[in-house]
Length: 441
Image (tube, rainbow, N blue to C red; front, side, top):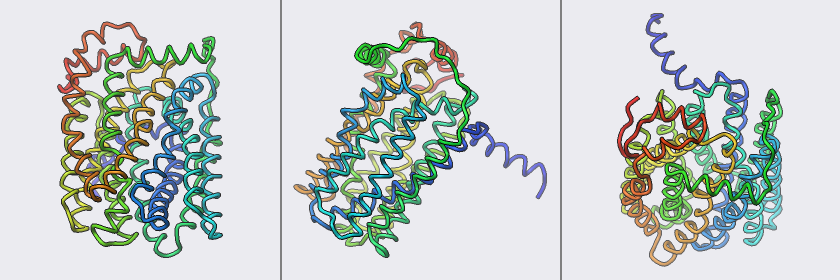
C-alpha cells in the first residue's frame, strides 16, 4: 500500500486516540473495557431473570430503582470525599465490592436459591458502591491524562469504551442466557473485575502536594452546591440531564417486556436490541472523539436530544426486530452525542479543586433521577402497555433543547467570572453567545 495513503489513514486514527499517549489512561481503558463487558452481561441477565421469576413490568422498575436510589443519597457525599481522598483507592475499593456482589448473585442463582428480595437487596448494595465509584472515576480521568489538551479526547474515548462494551456485552449476554443461564453471566461479570483492578494497581503517579487545607465535610458540600448551581453553564447541564434522566433515559428498563410481549422473541432478541443501542452510542462516541475541539458542542447537545426523542417515538410503534434494531442504533447515536458533549463541557470548565463535587452533582443528575424514571417506566408499561414508556420518553425530550437554552443565559456573564485557569482557557476557546449556537475558535 502506498506510504502516503497509509499516512492519510494513520493521521485521523492517531488524532482520535491521542489520549492513549498517557500510559495510565491506556491501562484504565483496557481494564475497564473488559469489566464493562461483564457489567452489561449482568444487566441484561438481571432484567431477564426478574421478568422470568415475576412476569411483572413493575418489579423490573422496582429492582432497577433499588440499584439506582443509593446514588441519590451517596453522590453528594462522594463528591466531597473524592476531593479529599485518593481517587484511585476509592475506585479500587468500589470495584472490589462490585465483584463481591456479582459472585453473590452467581452463587444464589446457580444454587437455585435466588428470590426477588435477594435481587433487590444486592441491587441496593451495588448502588451504594456505584454511588462512590461513578463520582471518583469521572473526576479521576484528568489525573490519568498527562496532557491537559487530551482531556476532551479522553472523555470521548471513555464513551467509546462504555458503548463498545454496551455493544458486545448484551449480544453475548443474550447468547449466554439462552445457553447456560443467568447465573454464569453473573459469574463472568465477577471475573471481569480482575482486569480493572489489575489496571488500577499497575498505574504509576507522581505525588503532587495540593497545598490546600481540607474543608470540613459540611462546609465542602455547601461550597460545592454554591459553585455548581451558581455557575450558569454547569447549572444548565445538571438540570437538563436531570429532566431527561427522569423522563426518557430509563425506557430500556422495560426492554425485556417489549422483546417478549410485543416482538414475541426471547433473550437473543433482547440482546440484539440492547446491543443496537450500544452500537449507535459507540458510533456517536467515535464521532466526538475524532473532533479536535470542544467548540460547537452546544449545538450537538440539542441535535442529539432531538434524534434521541424522535427515534424513541418511532420505536414505540415498530413491530419488527430489524426495524427496532435500526431505530435503537440511531437512538444510541443521539443519546451518546448528548451525554458525551455535556460531560466534555463540564469537565473542561470546572476548577480542579471542585471537580469531585461538581461531578457528583453531574452523576446525581443522571443516576439520582434514574430510579424514579425506572419506576415510572415500569408503571407505564404495566398500566398502558410496553410501548407507553418509549412513547412518553420520546415526547419528553422534544422540549429539552429549549429548556436547555432557557437555563443557560448569555455567556458574557459567565466569561467575566474569575474562576480559575480551567475556565480562563475555555473563555479563549469558546466565545459562545448562546449554547445552541456554534462556537468560533
